[in-house]
Length: 313
Image (cartoon, rainbow, N blue to C red):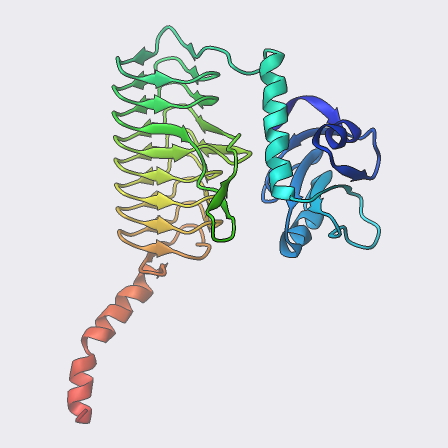
C-alpha cells in the first residue's frame, strides 16, 4: 500500500503513540507485508521468526513489540508498540482516513464509455473499468479494483473481497487484518461465473493479460498470476502464490500458500501443489510430482496384489 503522501517517522510515532528508534525525519512512503515490502515502506513483526525475515527485507522501518528490538547495528527504523499487529492496523486506518479527507480516496467508479456493465452490477469507489470490457449481471467489484481493457467478468463473480487474514486471540476469537490492497485485472482477462478474487492484504492481487478463469475459481490475496494462464473449474490458489506465464491448472487443483509455479507448467486435475514446480513440466498427484512418476507409481501399486500372491503373502 503506497501512501498518498510521505509521513515522517516522527509523525507516525506521535500519532499512533509509539516510540521510534532511528532518524525522526525519515520519510515513510508506504506499508506492506514482510513478503513484499519495498524500500521506503514499513512492515510489522510480532514474533522473532517474523522479525528475522523483516530484518532481511527491504523495509525502511519495522513495527516491533517492546523489548524485541535486536542488539546490533541495523539500517532500519524501529517503532515499538505493545501490540505490533494492532499498531499496523491503526496505521492503515490513519492513512486511509487522511487519504479520504484529502480527496485521494472515495472517487466514484470510472467506466470507459465503450465498456458494457449489466444491470445489477455493483461497482465500489475508486474502481476503474477499461474500454471494451463486459461485466455480466450480479457481479460485485469492491473498492479500489482496476479492470483492464477487453476483459469479461461473468455473472456472480466477486472481485476484491477481503483477504483471509486473521490472528488468533486466545480462546476468545480472532483479530481481523484490514485488507488495504487491490485487485488488478490486466487486458483481455476473462473471469468465469461465481469466481472470487481477494484483494491483497497490503499489495496487489494481479491477473496478467490474456489469462482465463473457468467457473468457481478462487484466487487468494496477493497472488500474482502471469500472462496467458488457464485455470479450469474449482481451482483454489492460496495467498502469496506466483503463477508464471502460460501455466495451466486443470479442474480442482489446489495450491498452498507462497508457492511458485514455473512458466509453462501444467498441473493435472485434482492435484495438490505443496512445493514449487519447475517450468515446462507436467505434474499430477497430491502432493503433485511429475506426472510420469505418479503414473508409474499408480501402475506399480496396481500390480502389488500379483507380487504379494507370488510371495505367498
